[in-house]
Image 1: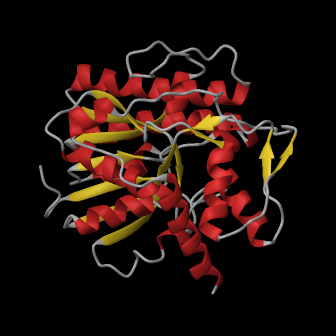
Image 2: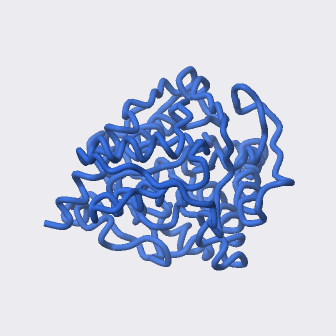
Length: 327
């Protein structure tokens, strides 16, 4: 399948992932992109570089209003369902967060059905696994959220619910979909709503000020950090693939510790500062531990996707972007 000459709707289009996905779709010769956003979380600055392109149309709308999503979906070949609350805004406003992540997706699927959209790509999350423990985490493993912090459990369950809604619409209405469980997404145009990406930003800010970077706890906590351009490429592959109905991890398959992140930032900055270890006092944290083991194998086998950006290279790109912004 090809994007050439086709129209696509991105809900949550004024987001980190939405902006990079728009870049990828334009490079793939899409005819028109509709970026639907109500700007409660996204910002115009994130997509400012896109709005000069006549193929890009900003649609101010809300996925909680079915009529607005339905209007934006008319004539679209596919919908990228990116709009949703992450853990930090979910904690700040759980009532709205639950509505957006459940009813909002339901409206998106309804709009896709009535507008005759060919496919939906749903942005899920590895938070759906909860604190499942295994040597390698694959999509077929059962999930376990009972011992997570309440906000992480609610967020993870909302993503599982979204995957089930996609399956239901596939079964009942023949709507094709692929669901992607993102790792910890970071990169250029990064916002302040993702716990793990924030750690990268905070570490760089400390080093830039000449301060010793702070490592939380013993630093052995791990996450699977994936650069936003790899995520955008995965979303595009999931839309274009001849295969559908799959839930897939979009991850690097590499467990990176907090120490690894700090060392990468220090290397990129050419700094000799030594990190400082402090007790963990975070009010919000994502699911994690000292081992994750997420597997990207299904995405590789199903849609031909492979992550390409290493943690150090991704941080190097992020830092270079920050420097341009500050200039």
